[in-house]
Length: 121
Length: 377
Image 1 (cartoon, each protein chain N blue to C red):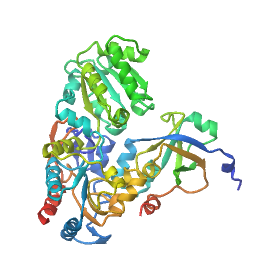
Image 2 (cartoon, chains in turn orange, cyan):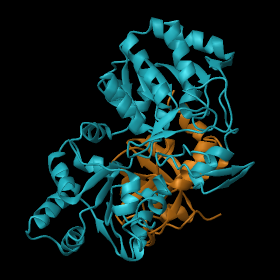
Image 3 (cartoon, helix red, strand yellow):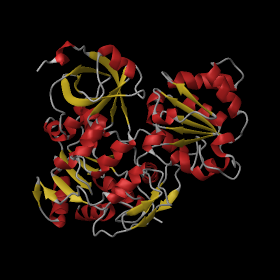
Image 4 (tube, rainbow over the protein chains, first blue to last red):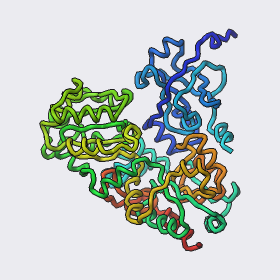
């Protein structure tokens, strides 16, 4: 299988964390469930940024900051300013907390909450 | 009618018939409908035990601790918060709820900044600011129950003619996207700069077109309100003087801290005369060896470098739900969901006291657990 991902560029963006009502409601339900991962393990970028750097809505990306990284699902929406990336407030945004993050394509799977938790202990 | 404890709106108009829930937002409905999912069990070092043994172990840990922090309490009732303050006094513990609204909340309690109730906003407010908060996501019914959309005594024509909405944020949030009719979105890169610009315009000076347009609307009414969120708190830093002057010129300020009983926490702290600590700073300074976490999940809210230090402490978690922090705690004590399984009082975001109306009854709640721990010491 051709791995087109390696031809795509990395992008460095300012990180903004935000509160998402849908994410909050699934976090109240079960923080180790699939719905929590679906609503929390995401990074949102602006449509123009996605177009410039060749990212597609729904692809899995490696998000890095301060020598830490996690795989999240990329979403494209106008709620993100062009120079910023949005991550809903959760253990994912806390783990990656930094002024800036780097986003690059990956062929990996989305990081699970249990995988993140292991890095705390 | 049930009082929803999903956020600090504490909506008191929720109807429940079995598993049918009416008027609640997705957060409130989820809180009620998923109450049985992911519940905690009493644990000591990850092993199942009974609740009395878990409380006894918590007492032992506290007796052996040098410096303790009590963290959370935002989902606890005023009654439970009061016991937590007594516990803090007894063991000289630091107390923090993780909210950054402490200074402004204290200023409201001291009446150093004008504030009002949400009912007054509904009846009288004309210009409504949402500054640094995406209220549509954090407190979903805020706009429809109290601010932009409803019709009030002196605002019979609602948002169509009788309200003017101003959203100030670093990004075009979902709330900003609602700023269409009689509304404006101001993108902020520097909150203090915009406040200075407003002050200049209010005093007749030169400002940008957007600011001048808002000031023109402000001058139409003597009842305007600013709802400030975490973004505003961050933007202001410790410089509150100009903001207080701005509020005094515009009308009133109400915090939009979504944490359910955060304002109750600040009032309880204020009345007990205990200074608010900052657990993140304490962890950086390695100033505590034990933490009691009540209804909060700091691993889901603190930056990694700080949370990693928390993970090294002796942790006692009191929580109805399994959390990331409960997974690494030394002791887990299951509690009741306030408002669903236990009663008591809470303060709404505007400091209005609300009596909870629980649907179910639980043997143990935060107040009883904290009282048992206090008794054991």
